[in-house]
Image 1 (cartoon, rainbow, N blue to C red):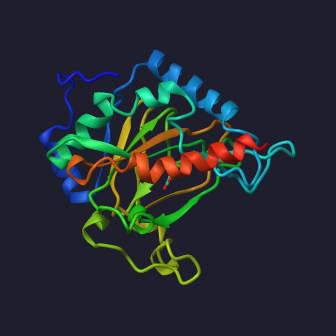
Image 2 (cartoon, rainbow, N blue to C red; image 1 turned 135 degrees about the horizontal axis):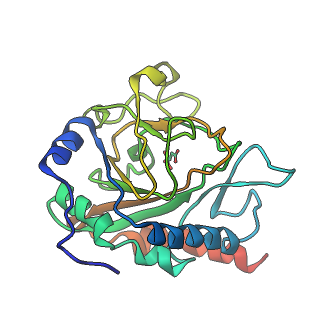
Length: 253
Ligand SMILES: O=C(O)CCC(=O)C(=O)O
């Protein structure tokens, strides 16, 4: 764990940008050897998360297959599977910007790794994460660490600038968490590309989505969401329940 406080977090301009638009992309904060180690951790996570079956509670699976094989879209939670992913949670490069935004330290709230695989990586419809988390504090901030370059072509995150100031937006009748189709207009959101090692930080109210990945390389990203320390360490109750369900499922395979 790297808790050095000398690492600069957000500049005044980045704070202003985040306050105004609800997201900010930071220059790469991780070196190539560190990224390689994390990419290996992402591979190990895939290998250790159990069979790629639709009822594996740790996995989301792409609807398209590659060579008639199912392909993982997302794994959640992740920190109990690979120690290097647990070590990253309180790395100051992840938590420094969050502490600056909260004005106090944060606790991990949720952890996941999105794979966005080559050729078949699917889109994410426009949504606000808080729609999923309404029974919790709404002071939640997600730090996305890009393991690969994220581009418009491979389906980088896209945000609706300023949407974090609007509260929860009207949602689809068919899907209680997706923002109404009428609002799901690509022209209201902007690409947030970044080089591998960059951090993409956004509020739980910032509406976001991503387009499919039709390129020949994956676009992996680790997403850790934090809550302010004043709201307590909810992970042992909220997320560990899900972790236990994943472990129980695996134990009977
Ligand atoms: O990785 C992406 O493209 C979107 C991620 C996202 O919106 C989510 O996991 O909630």
